[in-house]
Length: 409
Image (cartoon, rainbow, N blue to C red; front, side, top):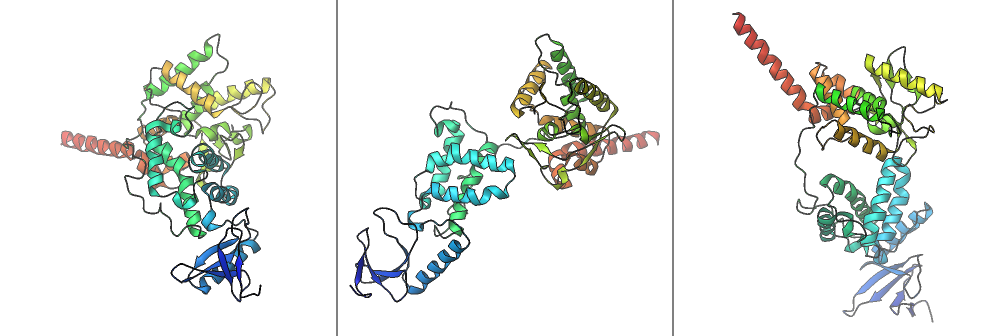
């Protein structure tokens, strides 16, 4: 055969050679020419040629793009053959190194437990808005049981579903950017396609009595003979500093300055059981300590010193062996204390941050200062969450001042 002869591929499609290496064309039943370019990913019984378009220029552009990617050392996928799992793994391999460990772990969990089991061998082009919407409805109705029948039927919250769907949207967007699909079908999702929005309610406003009840309940549980640990120090620091759970678990003794009566947030202990930087630049901060917090921490350090766990890099809150506490165990401990105190069952460990905000609002601390101590990136975040506390306080104070002035007149 000559260069102009017809070449037969393994798949049985007949390709005519062109004057460009790796570029061929096929003649359709209608007599039109359709150009293809050679791809390096060869599989048994499959053609190495990938459709590019009806012009030679389109094939040359695709071929040039492929060579550029290979020159950068990037893994390449045949667009017309790409499965969801291939694209998802390629996306994750390039994304993981740029993510915080917590986000990387969350994305990996969502892929392994939800998206790969559901869409594993699907062609990436088949993962469209309808497939997205059906998965959302299944998770709303049955939770992980819709993916794994061995899991209990437990509907997931809108916030949890939103978090789980992030990597799916990013995988599909990645496929569109790489030209593996013609466009991103998830770019214009309707409201009905997305997870239902939960009714937004302001965070619980803690009273001084509720805070006292929480600490007292922790003391009572710690005094019981069967108690294995006391969570009084952890909860006291949580309520009176507003630190996030991971920040509390990442505290080391070097972060506590007893002379200046301040602690510094330098790191957090992540759910993947390793240290990571604070949530944002604003998360690295100084937080002043009240007298009761200093007293609790002094007692905690005395006990740590007796146990040989008071070195500068030792954890402030740890197990008896000096190892980091589990996030889940801390949550369970909080729930036991909360229930023992007779507090609202909807309160979570994260609610201790709301307790701190309530204390600040009731004592007249301005919202800008609160934003700094809570580690929010911008005061607008603090306003959005806690404006009900500060607006009401301001309105009531203004009302009382005006009424008192009228009474004096």
